[in-house]
Length: 345
Ligand SMILES: Nc1ncnc2c1ncn2[C@@H]1O[C@H](COP(=O)(O)OP(=O)(O)O)[C@@H](O)[C@H]1O
Ligand SMILES: [Mg+2]
Image (tube, rainbow, N blue to C red; front, side, top):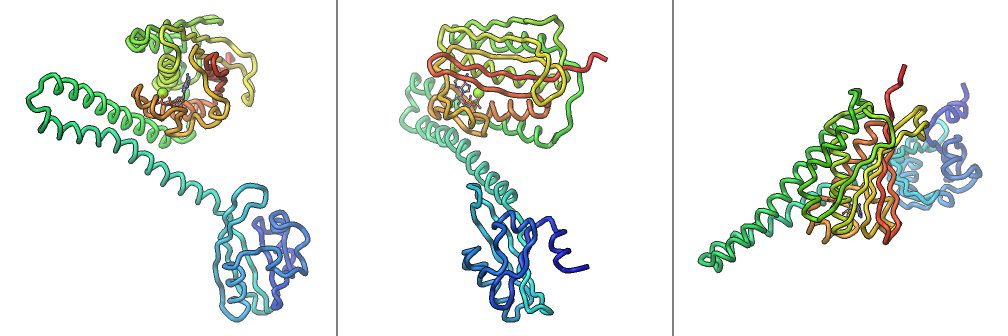
């Protein structure tokens, strides 16, 4: 067993650096990362990162091992490696193994961004509530009209906090469920009619006409989780009502698709189309991110949490479905969910 054979067999990038700091060995994974022409070159010309060069030097002058972090962007994407440098004393060399920790770092960053966002979202209504309590105790104590107005606002803010916590709990539960695919037979037409019914007060408020049409034989059955699918179409329809035109129309259409993309088999497509201002294409890719909103102020004004579409995306993924968002500024938006239907056999 030659040592070069061992190097080549390893799936992670490995380099060997000799006493003169020139590269004397590299495996395929390292060639893929740094380029194939490293052999014989001074390591500093390939990897210009002082911390790593220090670690290599330390090992070459006698330290048993040293670690360094390497951050670079070879193909336009930030990669972060933990580099372990160990001595190969018999060859008076150092062996470098590169462990890709980009994903962990990214996940850690996302977690702390998320916590910062949640804190901020909760703090805003809390600050408003605290402020109004002060006012009610002081200046507005003997002013019934002001008191009524402030209590209304306080109720709205408390409602927003409540929705935020509910949405966060939903997301948490969805994450706990992992990748288990739901297996109940759900009558989708019933779900949609129920959603429309439940949103009737919201639609009335904005004088919006919500219509459903079923271009398929009923009942419409999908494999799914009834409560979660209810949530999906509630969130999408609620958005269409909120962000569509006052006095406008929201059209929900269900039709059969013979072959779902990326899912070998038939499916059902539900589209929720509104006649609002639409969404600029630069936002489309990010709408399902947690707390991403096109217009922060407008969303908050309308009582939004910024989590609705993140929940939709999560549920649709769990159902092995597809969410597609299309919008033409000025001509409304169209959110389509495709779901697999059970095999007729
Ligand atoms: N039908 C729609 N028309 C225009 N913009 C929309 C529509 N649905 C969602 N959006 C945009 O996407 C953002 C995120 O939606 P969502 O996750 O449901 O959060 P929320 O409605 O609580 O703000 C909204 O703030 C809004 O800017
Ligand atoms: Mg929403």
